Length: 165
Image (tube, rainbow, N blue to C red):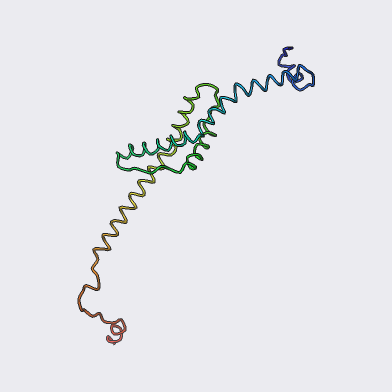
């Protein structure tokens, strides 16, 4: 096969001769085999249900440990985790064809770092809400009940306004 320099590559690539066809085949094969295959492998691993479940369990563990072993949350919706994974993938994926496991761990850590602060904030807000409900309930229970006041009769509003004339 004839080798082309940088100036001749566009003419050789886009022309219709046997050498150009071979060049296109080799270029396409090389591009797919080496560059894309590893990126697809990383993408398949990152978006796999196994990885989503792993992230889900990691979220539960991190919340439990970060709240001082006081709050246990259920597994989160896998579709929501998948959506966050898509966001992280599009903003942080480096598309490198080496160190697939390292890249996967980095992306997983970014997902966890993205989810945890909002989840902890939501948990704290819910705890405060439940405490305020408890205080309100106690106040309501502490109010005297009108039925237990005895036989005290209250005067009507009309008698109050009309008797003072």
